[in-house]
Length: 252
Image 1 (cartoon, rainbow, N blue to C red):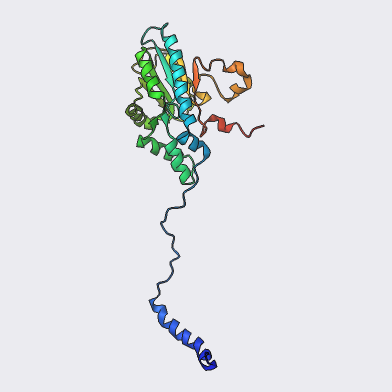
Image 2 (tube, one colour):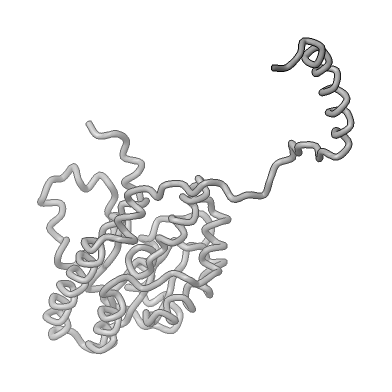
């Protein structure tokens, strides 16, 4: 049993003992640490692009079907007088790593980080894209890439395309703030692309309805008849991560 005398003395003794130890205790820091934040969940749209069999299958399927159609069309054309126009991002090049990295940081798209990504030249070829581009050349056509990547990073874009087996006869980037591609489409037909003659464009391939001449999101209001060119002159690929469709507003 502990005596009352010892109990009464214990608080004072603790104070003395603790006061003697304070000098040897390091203060707790309140400064921010450099520890990495907890990993954020990757959005389903990015996961679908990067991890689903369906994504790869639909790209391979679309490019194979477009290739079969192109073979039939090319039989009626003179070599070197025609072209296929393709978009770059999410049509030929897979930029889902950029989307994943931004999502992991809890951040979204910005022009500066996008241009920095383009300068890394790390986008990969999408399934079926390289074989299709090679087919265009084998059939005697020209490959023209019309992209809204900034002209300041067009050299990096050309190198990235070539390095993953996507050889283009011309790459037309966005000059200034004009994102409408129709003037560049017209320049292909009008012979205004340096190094190329006037070309009959027999096919367009893209992931955004604005990758096709004269079209916008309002084409959906015209019913199936307004989509008649798709599967012939026009071939569209899925992109659930971004695009002009995001401005359509909530579903009705």
